[in-house]
Image (cartoon, rainbow, N blue to C red; front, side, top):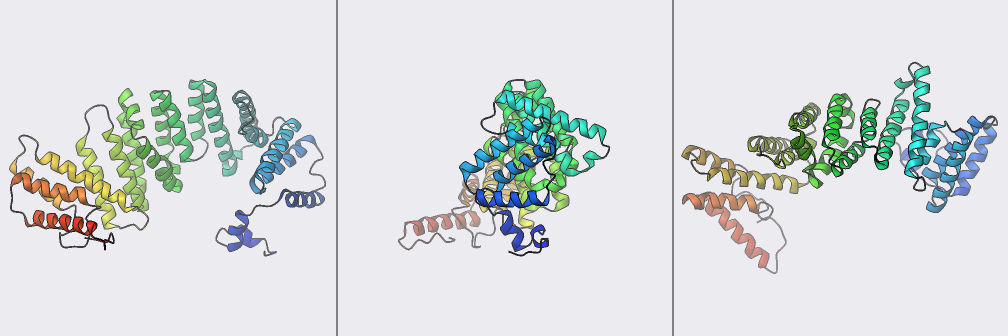
Length: 402
C-alpha cells in the first residue's frame, strides 16, 4: 500500500477501491486507535470530547471490523458509552437508535434529542446548514425519526416529520419508497399524496440522483407494487400530483439524455395509469409506451434488459389489435392500427428472436386472419413461428434466432 495519502482520496485509484472495501481484525483497529490517541493526547479531555472519541470508535468498528459478532458488540457498547458521556451527541444518538436492541420508544427519544441538538446548533451558527454533510445528517435523522414515530403509531406526526426531512437534503430514494409503502399499508392516501407533492417541490435535487430516482424508487414501486400510486390518486382524485411527478422526472431524463432510464420511467408511468380503479386513460398509456419504445430504438442501450423492450412491444401489439376490432371502428382506423402493429417488428426476413417476439408476431397474424387478407407478412411470420417450433423440437436446437 502506498504511503502517500493522496491516492486514497481519489475514487478512481486502485488504492481507493482497495481501501474502501478493506476490513480488519479488531486487534488491528485497536492498534490504529492507540496510535491516534498518542497523536491526539487531549482527545478525551472532557466528557463531550470523549463522547466523540467513543462514537468514532463505534463507527470504526461497525464499518471496518471483519468479525460480525465483534462488530455488533463493540459498536453497540461504545456508541452507548458515547451517549452516556454526552446525551446530546447527535451522531451517537442516531447510531444507537438504529440498533436492533433499541426499542421503538427509546429510538424516538434518542432521535428527538439528536434532532433538537442539531436544531439548536444550526439556530446559533449561521451558515451551518450550507455544509452538505450537516444538512444531509439532519435529513437522515429527521427521516429516521419519522419512521420511528410511525412504528410507534403516531401517524400524523410521523408523516409531517417525513415531509420535513425532504426540505433539508436528500437521503435515498429507496428510503422514500419505503415511506410510501408504510402509508399504503395503513391506507394513508392523504399522507402519500402530501409526500409526493413535497417531493415535487424539491425536484431541484433530482438531477444528481436521477439513476436512484428511477432504479430505487420508480422501478421497485411500479414493478412490484404498481397499484400504490394509483390507489392514492384514485382515493383523493389527485392524479395531478402523480402526473406532475412523472412529468418532472421525464423532463430531467430528457435533459440528461438518459435514454435507458427514460424507458423505465415511461414504462412505470404507463403501469401506474393502468392500475386506476376508474376508466383507464388508454391514450396516455399507449403514448407513454410508444415514446419509451421509439426513444430506446433511436438510442440503443447495452444496459437495458431486452425483456423490458419485448414486454412493451407485446403490450402495444395487443392494445392495437384490441382497438382495431372494436365495434364501429372505421376501415381507415383499422388499417392504421394494422400498420402500427406491423411497425413494431422489423421486416419478416430480418434475423430476430421469434420466441421473444412471439406475442407481437401472433398479433400480426391474428390481425390479418380476422380481416381475411392475403398478407405476405402474415404468411412470413407464420412460417417463422413454424420453423422456430420445428427447431425447438430438433436435437440440434441451439436457441439461436429463427
